[in-house]
Length: 145
Ligand code: ADP
Ligand code: MG
Image 1 (cartoon, rainbow, N blue to C red):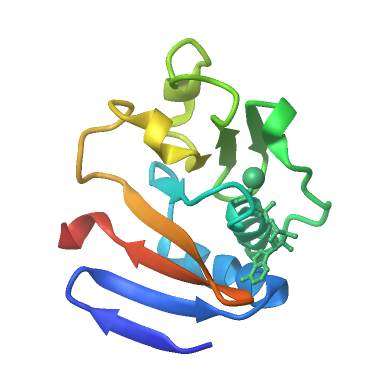
Image 2: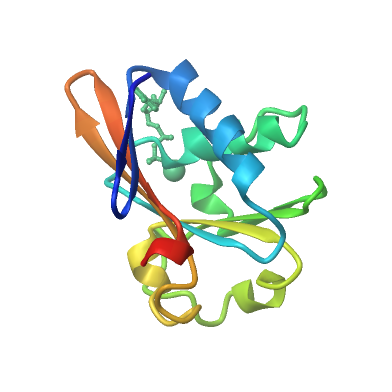
């Protein structure tokens, strides 16, 4: 997996699913309770796969289901993790996401629907694009915005 460090963050070329999980397990070492991670990218990009890697990086043993039918899933990891999938909703309001923002590491799929949940520039951004057989992942930390 190659890493390009640019002014606004890092870009990872991620060739397959195993590498995507490994990237999630690696990135989580930078994150803590209260961090919001906005996962951007089209259907099938690998947002849930990366989240599974994050959970395995936190030592979570169970396979993690896609939360498409569960808007929010909570995990009693350390830090505790909230995984939200906004695919089937128009916005974040009314789901109760804000209850977890301070206590949990919060990963949100379909981040474009999370506009206004946290102030602009305070969340991490993980943008996934298709790149040949694999994916290109751009990670931007709040600090460098
Ligand atoms: P999303 O949650 O963004 O809709 P998923 O995480 O469910 O996407 O992944 C969709 C498919 O893409 C899965 O079959 C998964 O194995 C595959 N996938 C994930 N990451 C990669 C990658 N880096 N390269 C190739 N395939 C990947
Ligand atoms: Mg998904």
